[in-house]
Length: 389
Image (cartoon, rainbow, N blue to C red; front, side, top):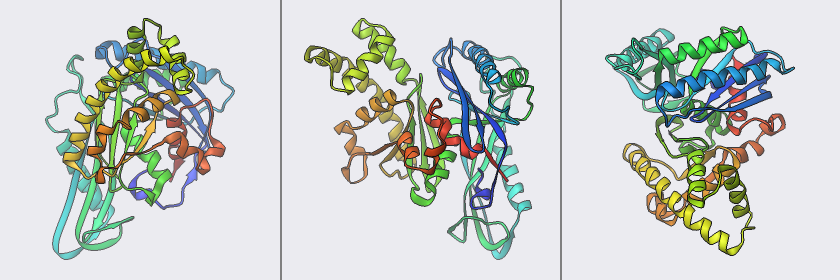
């Protein structure tokens, strides 16, 4: 949903396909009238921690498999697909567009389009290919959206058709590898016979979903998804996505590291984690587990602190965090972020205000249409991508 569509009457599209490519897996779903009716998941044979050649090949293979599951289902077939890309498959950026004149001028679509076109040209100019490993690859624009607008220094919900002496726009952009995106398109077309395909990035998509859910209730917050191989942090300030950070330390990697330290298997570690948070481990097992977790906490917090210091240097952030991911990953990150050392980073030396997206959804009107087999992330964005003007 773009800035210029906020507050306008929307109609539900019939059926859309949603594809969320993660740093270690793929989830695909079918949404009808804003609600998911079927979903399928697949772990990838290679992750974002590996070479881009191996990771991209694993994506095409995994995508073929989940799309086969969608086609086998009795759910209605999508008329369009939205494919959400993870780090490191994109570069995003924010530009501030300003026009200041002595006399009032009209803000119309022609002016906005011209400003955005120049901004895109500047953003894409002289950029080396995202992945130089692919011979002849080029960058392709993914997102090109206005997040906020100000007239004469005041925030407005719609600037079109109004006169002003000063116009300020926050412009969100991103690009990715044309080779990878073309191969993904080819795979989707082969598996679905559908050519209506749009690409998005994780941070922009998470922001759109939360913004639609929260509205004016919250202007500044962080979105953290640590459920895969990577941890992604999206930063929202003044109701605009202003930056994104990613680091190679997510719950999937952490789970393998815990298993190695405990001399166990990733599957057995999951059982241990559940018992730990249910307070059902024996005293000896708890002491051993907490000693190992302390090492993981320290490593993750080092990455988080580096990212948060960069965030603090560029924008003012309220201490509110929304967590994405499955139940176990959010439990871990909640535990990590409650570390007393982080209090020094928070305004007024208070703890971060933590909430999970799953909890938000359960308190919202979306709850009645949520699909229990799908992730909170896809349940969050399904209503947004199922609407068109």
